[in-house]
Amino acid sequence: MSKNYYDAADLRKFSKITEWSPELGNKFFDYYGKVFEEGALTAREKSLIALAVAHTEQCPYCIDAYTKDGLQRGITKEQMMEAIHVGAAIKSGATLVHGVQMMNKVDKLEM
Amino acid sequence: MKKSLKARNNDIANTSRQMEILSEGVFATGELPTFATKIKETNQFPLRPKKLEVLQINLGYMCNQVCSHCHVDAGPDRKEIMTLNTMKQCLEVIHKTAAHTLDLTGGAPEMNPNFRWFVEEASKAGIKDFIVRSNLTIIRANKKYHDLPEFFKKYNVHVVSSMPHWTRGKTDKQRGDGVFDKSIKALQELNAVGYGLEGSNLKLDLVYNPSGAFLPGDQQALENDFKKALKNDFDIDFHSLFAITNLPISRFLDYLIASENYEDYMISLVDAYNPAAVANVMCTNTLSVSWDGWLYDCDFNQMLNLKVASKVKHIADYNEELLQNRNIIINQHCYGCTAGSGSSCQGVVA
Image 1 (cartoon, chains in turn orange, red):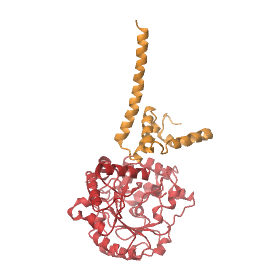
Image 2 (tube, chains in turn brown, purple):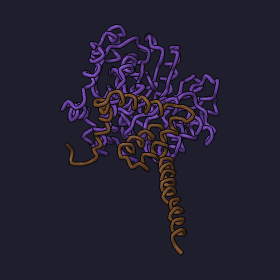
Image 3 (cartoon, helix red, strand yellow):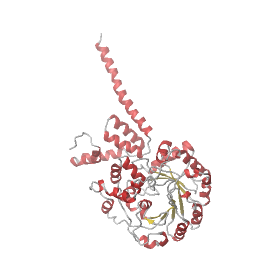
Image 4 (cartoon, each protein chain N blue to C red):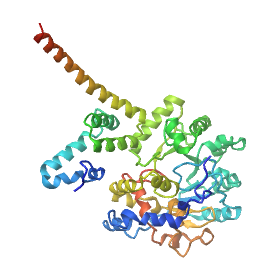
């Protein structure tokens, strides 16, 4: 067993999760594959969304996978960075909007 | 400008060393299956030619560019150029071959001093599809090449040109500073004489190679993106885009090793292996002729000096029937042509 929590080589073994729960694992991968097909959104747009979410979720496997996926699709590094800023903006906005709750609580408690 | 691996006496310029690298590491330990093992799984070993369709002739390794991914290791310092005598031997074959496509490549084939004579003579054979692989910048490199668009038009040559991206940064990083602007100008000049326009029979196709250690994405999606961007930004039209995978040989192999991407790249190729692509891989319908007349299963085997496994090994002894009765030489680099939708000089194959 690796001494690290994350090992880049583990990404290649992702499909092995089906071994201990074939039905659920296969359903997940079928769903996953379907989600990323061309639809109302292009596969390219979906790749950028995935890259942004990969960062907000701070998943190193997903970051590797969707950076490579973006390059393969011809997505530029500027477009990738802008997508990450969208994720970062929502993440920071989501933090800051809770400031209103803090303010409400302060207003309620203070004389 | 950078020098070729050969001029730098780089270890990788030695084809035997390349073959060693491709057999060591993950393939020696068994972590990844060799290409032969892989195609045996689907009973496709030994790989055999089908009907010959494409005769690809390399007019020389000299080029005005030194692209970082070049599998030919071409550049201005490469002096290997096809002689008039070898061209005459090729012409004899061109006049009798059953192949419907003649594909001239290099280096920059236009830099061969007898290029125009050869095109003129070859065009008399009435080959259905006559391709010249032009790097575009050659058209702008020197006054003597400025009339190439008109020359190509005169002989109804099908122009196939490399263009790694629709942005300046990515293109110049792979192909050299200033290449993007010159390529754009050359494409506009080709358009001006009728190449690449909708409905035009003057065919202009682009070749996309990934500018790094990753595989090409969907060819049709990339073509759509290229068409949209080149039309909007530069009013450029072209017909089709061929997405070609970089094979782990020569300069690209050197890059993979230097950037510590080699192993991951080979894993990507093997993981993306598609048995359906094997059936249509280009070595099954192509013969490659080197600048000095030797015969190979493909341009990549040429660069690895893997001559055809046939009694007939040289254009001077050409015998199509005998040549078709051969086993194709394979090695781990062949994974580059069978990944995903497959890859060939004409783009995807599956």
